[in-house]
Each structure stands twice: as C-alpha cells, then as structure tokens.
Image 1 (spheres, rainbow, N blue to C red):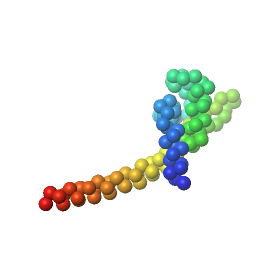
Image 2: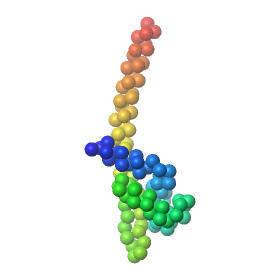
Image 3: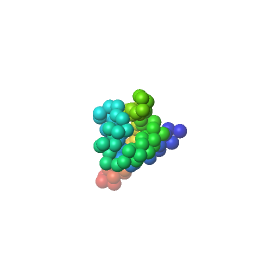
Length: 108
C-alpha cells in the first residue's frame, strides 16, 4: 500500500514543471493559479492540469475564494516516498556492509 502511495508521489514529481510548482508552493505559501502561471513558463490550462496531478497525489490542497482557487503545498504527502527511500537505503547499506566484509576477508 505504501509503495503504491510512493509511486503516486514519484510520478507526480517526475515532471520538472510540477516539481517547480510544488517547490514554489512550499517556499512561498498559498498561491492562486494566476500567480503560479506567472512563474511556470507554461499556459494557465497547463498549470491547472499539473495542479490536478499534484492534487491526486495529495501533494497540494486547494480552497475556493470567490472565483479563484488558492493552492497550498502539503509536504506531509511526501512521507510515503521518504519511507520508501529510507527502506531502500537500509537495503543497500546492508548489502554494502556485506560486500565490505567479503572484501576484508579476501585481504587476509
């Protein structure tokens, strides 16, 4: 289950434009689609599509105020990806420790 959640996060952040949008929301706080479009280098419809992907991955939330949507980052949604990387890192650390022990044994 957690690896599936991590997969959604990784897929959402695989696109450089989506990463930039997410990073802007993390750094600058809540933004409107229009504010995000000004810095994204893509059209407003493209930013909206990217935000939809980020919302599906639960990386952003939104609230409606009048006619505008205000988006905010939800960095806690990175937890499944961070947990996956931690587990995977432990796996490789164990393998490297074994390799080191084998190599030390060969030197004797």
